[in-house]
Length: 75
Image (cartoon, rainbow, N blue to C red; front, side):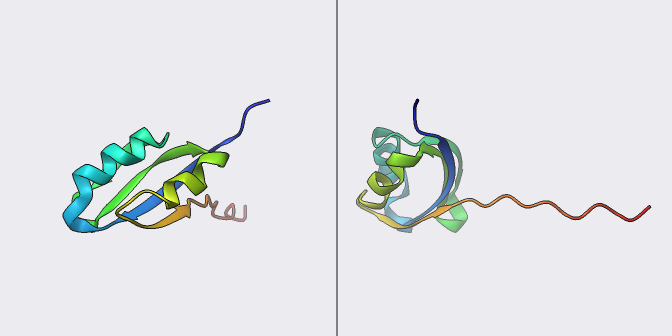
């Protein structure tokens, strides 16, 4: 059985964003969005790949995206 895919949010050093995006792809990340103004890249990677993303030059932080649900309104 393969590793589960994890949604991640990666903070990147602003001056290196295009280069870091290429390195993240090479490290196995599927890129969903690049938020240039924030220096943030969102996407997914298999669980074993999270540590590899943290070692990419220019990456400041890697967070696992957390889902949430609002409680249902009472009827």
